[in-house]
Length: 135
Image (tube, rainbow, N blue to C red; front, side, top):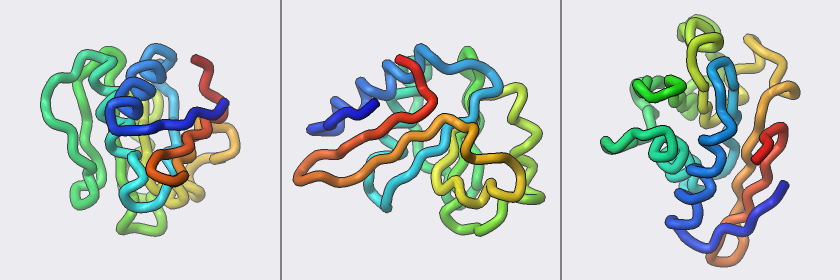
């Protein structure tokens, strides 16, 4: 499924729509260049799950857990090449895991089985491709 996203508000709305289909144990891989809108999409997902506090990419902490229903773990592996030993697998069954720069997970899970969001720049907007996510 593909969408053309014209602005930040549209990305937040798409995140809100995606939030309705997520459950504990879901792993969502977020792919796109720096500034593509991955964290904005996460903000929309979290907002759809009732979170009203600020959302920032956890680039330096690696993880940011959110007490929503279902609970969410936002991970950002931009700075590392292998997530082995980070402890993310402790969240796989209990949280929705939203992972930016997911290639670091290759040693832990089969990435081909996961939900995937690919964001690319197209003119002044973004092209968003969803795989293994039903809206």
